[in-house]
Length: 213
Image 1 (cartoon, rainbow, N blue to C red):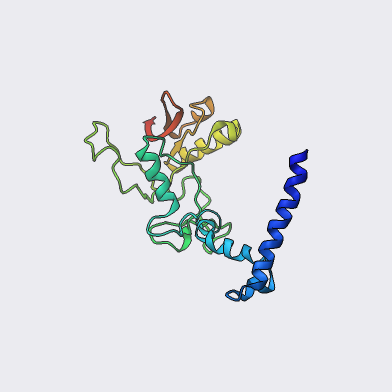
Image 2 (image 1 turned 45 degrees about the vertical axis):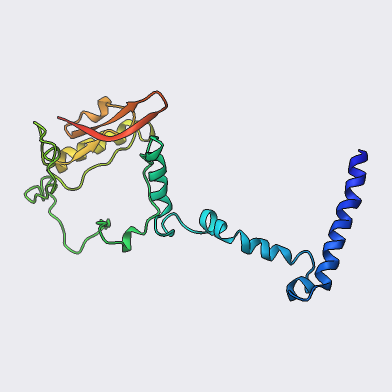
């Protein structure tokens, strides 16, 4: 450990020399009042943009392109999977273009108690799926509100059964989610299969889906 014994005095001498220089110089009052330690302020100022970009700033605060947009561009340019997981940190409640549906336990009006109450009111999807590409079986979903994909492994058989029966009552679609089709999905509700594309590099979930009866 001879080298360590020599390094400690050398480092101490270097720090002492730097402190003496900070005390003698007259350009920066900060360094005269806080020798050596005051240099941390200038270091933080130098790496400030990097700190704000990767630590402080949110994913949607960068300009001209957000971090999410750059991430998508980088993945596409490298021919990597550019499908990202669900979830968002966007301020969707105050951003135009996001419909918000808020649940309420008790409304002002007392709804009818009949199981088929409200079935006479139709709110179909505005888009005809498959029409843009001239698909032979293009169709318009009967409901603009549908059940998104939730994997069977994260729920249970009873939950999947209840969701599918609810889809049958509401006349909407239920996405099977990851895990494929199970007997609990076959309770009368229309289904959307969530397909998985297998590649040599990884298994990626695609956005395309298929309709089944």
